[in-house]
Length: 246
Length: 248
Ligand SMILES: Nc1ncnc2c1ncn2[C@@H]1O[C@H](COP(=O)(O)OP(=O)(O)O)[C@@H](O)[C@H]1O
Ligand SMILES: [Mg+2]
Image 1 (cartoon, rainbow over the protein chains, first blue to last red):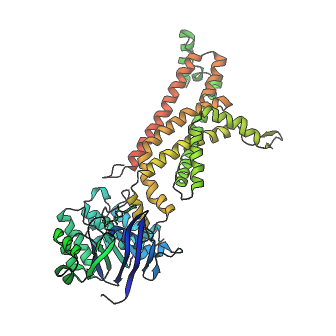
Image 2 (tube, protein in one colour):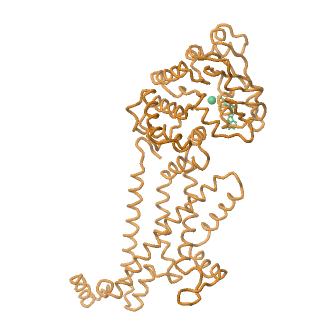
């Protein structure tokens, strides 16, 4: 399903927190249907980059466009951007006072003002997709981490996004539940969803990614298709990092 | 009612324990009016103070510093002055600034009567505490939860309405309960400006019947019951809002 049409274009982006420069001259392009993985040591700015894509954090220089929407435009239609971009966080961040089904239904009903009956049907399909149909009426506090994470994925998908951002979504999970979540993401990627994945799961990255980016200290040090990237990293920093994690 | 009245009449004659409210219809209706006024005043003020608290807490989350500063001053003012002084201030000082109006009988009366000022004063007093209570509840909602809402397209106001407030509310229910009990107790101050609430009714009765001792028992007992009912309701509310698997 990968086309040559870009959907996320990041050009020469700089992001600062006060004096701290967190992203320096970052450029990358994600094509429709593509899955890219961003890897790199903690603190290298991976989460910040994802937050910039979704306008959760404003950028200081450069340009980001998502599906033709300029994210750094002062007149940005935030809702238009956010219904195109789904985000899943490390800590799931489900709404604890709502059941799994309600969590999935909330945004389409309350934000997009869609018909409740239709949304519920869609939410139940999504719950089935993440294999949690029997947990529809259960609250997040009664679900395991992996189950919560899959509900969080379904919740994002309910907005019919064009791009999904995953920020270390398996980092807080034990190996067993990790598998379930990775399975869900793999399925999405194969179905042609555009995915941007920040992950420490190198095996998974190698398997699902069309392209791998390695970041360190706020810059993209090196990138390439997984086979090439893992076999023949050119930069010393990349090799050092890979040695540590592999 | 007849045997009850007979019993209390006997109690007064035989033992000098004079509870006129149980056998004298005038005193009984004074007492019931007082009770009704106290309950009504409490309910109206509880409702308004919660509304003030929610609004104040929402404004404190605003970007612009001016409304935030205004809310902060409001809270400081009402928290750091005695409620009796606030009430008197409204009733005597603020009221004097307002125009008089003509009522149905063509008599010139103040725009807001003593009951009106009691409601305004107590609602603002308890509301100021509620702002702080709700604010601390809002601060207890994880930033990441709010960010998740934002990522789903929620605006500030919508996130506040559907996600932040429902969670914050659960966190602050115990503190809110304490403040509302305090509010109910504070309504007795309305006595000072002649609002016919419980204390006022009791004072009317004892100044005629000279049964101060008995009426003090009645007063204390009545307030214990009113507060107990409120505490019970708050606990039920807390229970009803409890989320399985989640501890606020
Ligand atoms: N809101 C913030 N304010 C100040 N500094 C921040 C903020 N968010 C992140 N940082 C800093 O930016 C750097 C990159 O953080 P982050 O993007 O979370 O890295 P990663 O996800 O790769 O671990 C870190 O040094 C972090 O301390
Ligand atoms: Mg991170």
